[in-house]
Image 1: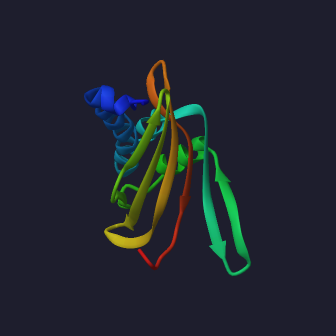
Image 2 (image 1 turned 90 degrees about the horizontal axis):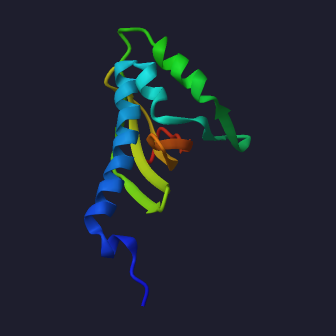
Length: 143
C-alpha cells in the first residue's frame, strides 16, 4: 500500500501548502498596495498570464505579460482601490509543482466589479515557490 507524502509528513505538507498560499496572498497584497515590485516577486521570470474571455461571439483566451500587469498596477491612480478577495484556496502539491484553484470576487473602490476563478501553477525554485502560469475566468453574474 502506497502512502501519500501528506500522510507520512502532515506538518511538512501543510507548511508547503501555506507557503504556496502566501505567494498568492503576497501577489494580491501587492496589487492592493499598488506595489509592482511586490507583485513581480510572486512570479517566475518566464511566467504567463491568461484569461478566459466569454462573449457573444464565443470563448477565446486573452494573454498578458507579467511585466505589463506590473506596470498597470504601478500606474493605477492613488485614489483607485483594487481588491481581489480570494474566497477559498484549493492547493495540490507534487514535489516541486503546485496547483491552486482560488474562487474570487473583485472590487474597485469598494464596488463589486466581477468574480471568477484563478487557476495558478507554481514551481518551487531555489528562491521558493513562484507562479509560472495563471489563467482566470471573469463574470458579473452567478458569483
